[in-house]
Image 1 (cartoon, one colour):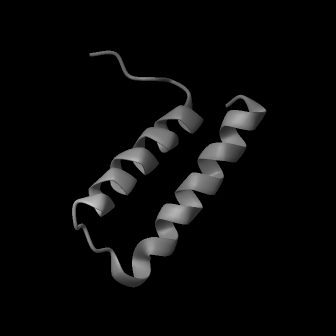
Image 2: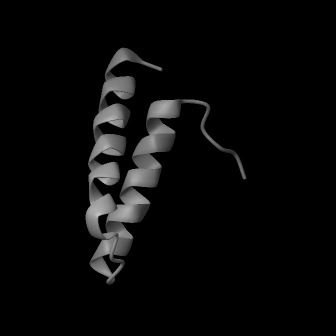
Length: 50
């Protein structure tokens, strides 16, 4: 299996996996803000091309 070397795409993948798990009943409680931080950082890194 080949993984991506682009950190932005990696963070986007992590965000999408966790967001999908939230739909199946995963409860992160107050730590949900970490998911939002991952999404923001992934978006910024994708935009600047890292």
